[in-house]
Image 1 (cartoon, rainbow, N blue to C red):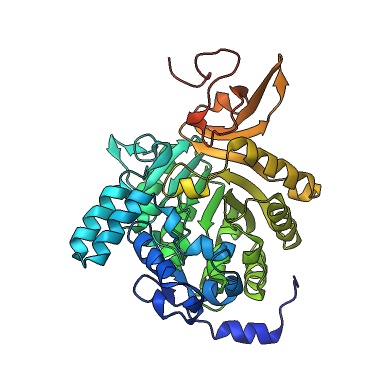
Image 2 (cartoon, one colour):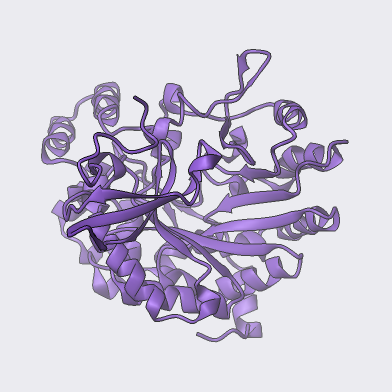
Length: 442
C-alpha cells in the first residue's frame, strides 16, 4: 500500500458526501445483484433485530463484490441469516411474510433482543458513577484511573458492525441505552475524583457529531481548574468507515483544530481507532486521514475483536499490525468477541484465539508487539489468555488481568482447567481442584 497521497485522490475525496445505507434503501444497491433473493431477505430479517447501517464509502471502496457473501467487510457490515438463532430468525421472517404491523415486528424483535445479553460485563449495574447518591447516566467508572463518557449526540455510527457489543445503543430501546446529556456532570465528577487521569469519550461513535457539539463536551474538561485529567481518549470507527470525517467533511478542519487544542493544552490525545481487517487500511482516503490526525500531535492506537468469518487467521492480524506500524499507528488490543448479540456466529474458543494471537505476534517486529491480548472484557476486568502450559502434569489455560476492578489483581496470574470449547471467562473452571478463582466472591 502506498503511503503517498496523489492529487487525483484528494480531488476525488473532496467530492465524497456521506450517504447512509439502511433497511429502507439497501435493495437499491446495484452491487447486491450478486445476492439471491433469499440472501437479501435475510438482511431484512436480521436487520429488524440487530442494527444495520452502512455507507457509500464502505460499499464502494472496501467491499470486494466479487467475493460475496464471503468478503470480510461485507460480513462485517451486512447482516446474514446465521447471525440470529434459527428460532429467532423464523419468528421475524414469519411476521414479515404475513405483512405484520411494524408494532408487532418491533415487539417481537425487542423480545428477542432481551435474550441476547444486551449489556455484558455488568455495564448498567456495576459501573455507573454517582454524585450525591444520584446515578450519572451516560458515564461508566469501572477502572480507577479511567472514566467512560457517552455523549448523547454520539450514540450512532457511520456504519454498524455486525458484531457490535454496544448494539443496544442503536435499536430504539431507550431503557437499554446509556447516554449523557449534561457535560457539567462529567466535569464535576472528575474534579471530585482525583484518581481519574483518563477520560474516554465513546459511544456509538463520538465523531459522528459535528465538531461544535464535541467541543462542547471537551472544552469544560480543558477549562477545569483541576489538573488530574492528563489524557483524553476518543473511541472511533471513523477512520475505518468514513475517513473523510478528517479530510473533506464540512468541519474536518475544525475537528483537527480541536485535536490540536487538546494537545496544545499539555494533555495527551489518543484516538482509539477500530480496525477489524487490513482492507480498512488500504485506501488513499484513510492514509490521508491518518496523516492529518498525526499532524495535530495526537496518537492513534488500534484495537479489534477476533471474529470468526472476518479476521480469524493469524496472517490477517500480522498483516494488519505491520501495516498499522508502517502508517505510524500503535497496535493496542486484540479482544475476544463479547458474550452478546451474534456471539455464536463470531466466537472462537479461547485456546484457538491464543494460538492465532501467538502466531501473529511471532511474525511481526518489536514495534508491533505493543499489542495485548487476546483479552476478554469481562465483569471483573480485562482478562488476557497468556498460554496453555503444562503444570504439575496438568495442561491448563494461563490467564492474567490486564485491568481489573481491584487494582491488586492486575498482572496476577491464575489458571483454568484446559478446555478446547470454552469461549468466555464464565465457561472456565479453576485448575488444580480449586473451587473458585481468586477474584470470585465466597
